[in-house]
Length: 434
Image (cartoon, rainbow, N blue to C red; front, side, top):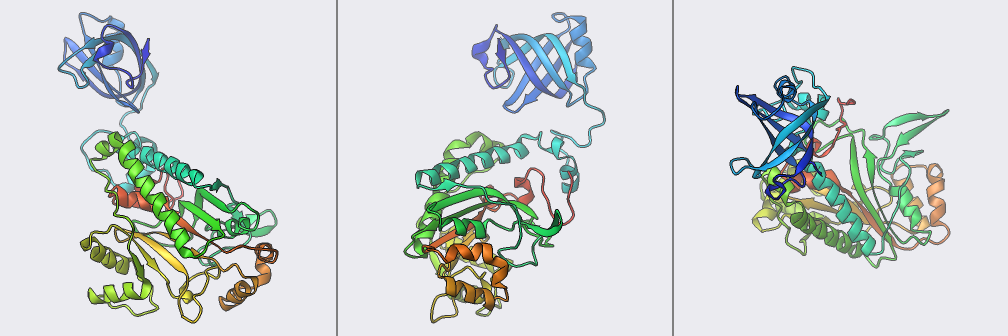
């Protein structure tokens, strides 16, 4: 007995089958009725000639509401005129769960639905193959990251998401009550992954949620997202970190290109593997480039969204989708980033993908005295970070690391209009449910 559309093909003609899924379409033409059943793997046509099926089957089929969950038992028949070359003649149809009518939104209807309606009824929206394909691709991307880093000697870790202090300042922290004291949702695993560098776990990575209380209503900002973070010890320079990230992103994009063909076809898109090695642009040169393109920007200014877009267009003309921007002003970077001695710059980097930053990182300040000095320079009280600083007093190797937004990378890779398309249940400034 075959079950499900995943294995159903013309080779299964004359076999008994069981099909379970959603009733996508019902057509009653008097002497014959048709039912299209959808599951994760595709569509199956159930054909019910009035003369060949029981009255009970005909009654159930003709009274079905769209999107009801059904179980069909029958015989597979070769049918050249049917997509897939096979149909099922039903012996019984069981309604496992009837769908109310009218539906809150269509699944296959060629009608534009507003984004708010889609996200309010996300359970229904995700029945669309093109919406679901994004998350199948995302799952493979996570698997490819794991595979690459484990092969490179990294250990996967999971750090706390309820923390006592933030790594990047308090303005973007979500505060919560932790029993009888204040706490925060973690912006990143930054402090903990650095502490691990003093333990002998010299290469670690984490793929997990991060939270930013940024009141931004843009197509690339959300309040909860998946961050791919890594940290590695005993580096000789920041270049060691760039090398790992570059090889990892190339492995992920190449792996997706070869493994998610059906999903890309569903999305009507393709994946382009970036040229490697990625060009390395110093921040001050990036400012010169966007100034030359007509943008008003001064040294010390953040490139911002428009600056990133402008640089992306310049680099695209040069044939590069992925490129590094390095050595940002130290003043603009967090306390844990190492200063470039004798200059106003730092050993920091961004990885930009077609005009959008997807990753940031750098070499960390591993010297205790210099780290405390940078904290004070940033207006932070070192005693509030004692749990973190203790790890630097008893032998901390040189190290560096990164954070990479998985959803941002997928948004650019798949040419999606909004980062929310890559998140099952998006959280932003106005959306807390579902």
